[in-house]
Picture 1: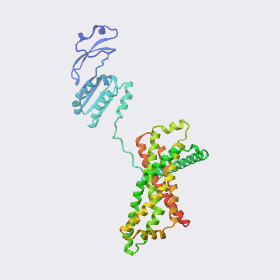
Picture 2: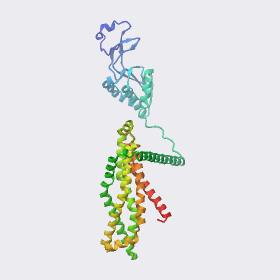
Picture 3: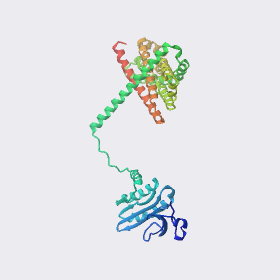
Length: 426
């Protein structure tokens, strides 16, 4: 039972004064600060049962004794802010603060934080602040609030540069190992799905395959033609500009033909497919993973690799050689146009020289690379899509990682194929 703050003893209800075990107690705060002077409370066992918050401030030399009392809870937030604000001038002039919390009957996070602010104000001014009389049931909250927003922790010792470098190398090696394991796992799952389709041809998602082929193949033709046309034109222009100094204009055709058909045609197209279609695959599968659509497919008894991934990768494998051929033709056309306009070489001369410089072998070398690059792009894009977590940040991170890894693998594969074909005389 709690009754609060009667200014006169006759204002206290008689029924409360006559209760067994209770008596009327007069609190005289003469000389204290932050409170009115005369108050009367109903008390039992010499302990004040007041729900209104109190805060008495008593100077003792250079030490300021603060005695909060009553209920320091959010229900009394207005009174608490008034009390703590009124005590600030006295707090700033004191050389030390002693906070006696024996009179606090109720305490929540708000009250504990206001008391903690008083204590921290004294500490920030370079003074001592002691907290005493904390009840057992309030000790945990006081300690928890005391640790909030503690930014002035001792700095961690500087790590050993050699150990830090070794740690970075180890983490990079572990990450590369995980990437290789994920790549091989996806390749194995894709192989199993392909075997299942070969055993049951009707299980192939033909509609999905045709749609993906339309997206990554037909819709990509305009941008591929434009980029490869410009690449071929730039190579031819630079070739004429530099070879003309040596009177070797005709060798520009050799350079454009061999470079485009063997290397740049398929490489540029593969890089653009990785950025255009690979990122789209990762974003699509990542969004499905975030919305738990892939888990729903598994619950329905369908294989996500067979339903979602196999049609996409097959479409890439079919589309990339075609795009590489179209891109190579566009690059050769760009080179021939520059040869006519900039180098003064007619189309008939350009085609005749190109026929002498380029063989079918050069065309084969470029086209053979395309399916392997498409397979690498598809596996990386789909595996990164399945690694997306439940946040938009994760989706963006895995999409970026997919494009970077795909381009890296495409360039590595191009170099390996170059060494391989050179070793077998192609």
